[in-house]
Image 1 (cartoon, rainbow, N blue to C red):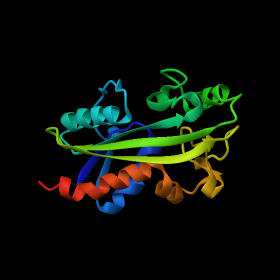
Image 2 (cartoon, rainbow, N blue to C red):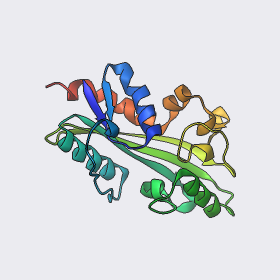
Image 3 (spheres, rainbow, N blue to C red):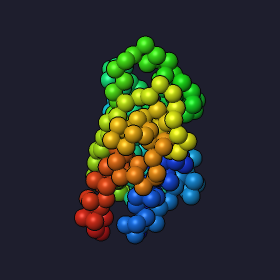
Length: 196
């Protein structure tokens, strides 16, 4: 079955293809379609934003759509950047700018515990949805380490593996990450959800 993954983030699309194509699905990205509009991600929670994206693109494409919203929640920053993770340093910020701002905010903090959260939603055209949530705990290191992954991966250290997300092989990261957990939870629901 064709499934649209509603993201313009190449790293996220690559991760989702690795997780979903083994299930026998043909994964399309937004670049494969001629949809130029985007929903306003103004939800107060990861689930609200993921649901908005999934519904929006399912209706416009006519294709079952998976969307997720994810972010980094840092204890010392009262859960920030949270739903603002992608635009933490401003609306046009890139990964480097977001990482730099995070390190500035934590410069005087010794407590650097954090967790990644992901909520994935699958929507059919017409409004039916299922969703799943995943989390991964770690801490923020003082300087970027590794060159894999994307976003805050070079700063997110997982003690169990003595590595940041950016240092982990993709298969290991997909197994333990917030997104991997959320997508696997979603995949468990898809067989029943996708029955015509």
